[in-house]
Length: 169
Image: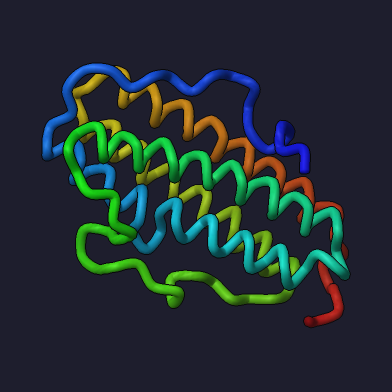
């Protein structure tokens, strides 16, 4: 699958310098928290399986975006390791759970929920940027935000292409 259309063609900045334990704590929810990259990957893969047969354009986009989110997950996990942290799949308050995934099946509801989830991710990333002092980490998170903004546009375009009254799944 060609995933180039689901992320910007800009490079991801290389992480350099020291990351403090505080900065690692700021990353864990983005990485493995309830609304972090782990949830995004699993949610989009699930939605791909559910919608791909009946809505192949949406299914393809979901898998392409999931792959991009996997890359974000990798980048954040590597940052945690670089700082001496442990990239367990957990947020700051609990281990990750499949109950974090939104299991809605209606394509309109799926796309609306995903738009909102991407908006929340962007807001969380912006709070993370305020929490960290390492300039290369700030640049990396800013670059990830750019992909998340693209995902919103893709989901909005797919939503506008659907009838507002699809047959329920």
